[in-house]
Length: 280
Image (cartoon, rainbow, N blue to C red; front, side):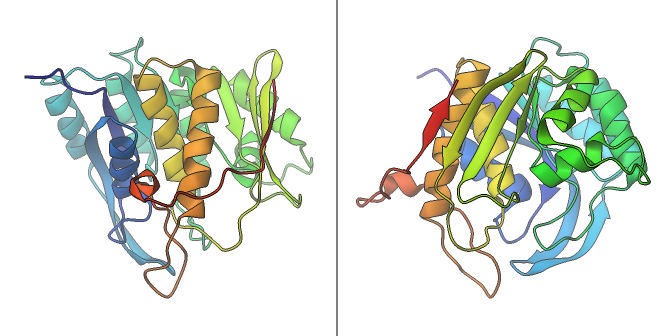
């Protein structure tokens, strides 16, 4: 019998469309040669046009799911997506703290692609104070980075992405990858920061359309690469490359957003290489 592939545990909400959430994590991790373990934090009612309702799971259920699989199987990386409540954040923090040597990727999901809110200020503060100090890397988009970095809702400052990264790093995470999809630029620029400044900056061809689950795909792909033993900087590039191709091959199964094809590499005719530039 062969050895198991790297195992990654994801904490996230269930998305019945398969576009985002725990389903996106499963597809991405499997697509990158990992075995996914899943802890469901919430159940959503949604389609590709938006989220209709959310049922948050009790924090004890979240802990029990995690503890049970962690006692049975060794994990090479953790990935955290939508959490929804301070109680769930506190519970997951307690679990994660028992595994300080395992890489932790946090996608601080604050809203859906349509703008449905998933996090209030109490949840954001709890992420800052409890989870970020344990994170290997967090992966906000530019809107999330600025919102999380604000000291309060009335803060009049308009933060640059560098300033936002600096503030996020002050809460103890090792790296911050700020995604530039929402910035008004001809191409998408994603920048990785650590406490010393810019680690790498990658430029990607901007794709047309709106995609459901791109952030989940990218963060899970980073976790998969880390589970394979790749460095953080290289994992960030590999994950971006995987995500760009998954988006390029995306499909529109319903009346809303496109869904990434996480198994694009199985097609005979793969998408052309992106017009990308890397600056280390």
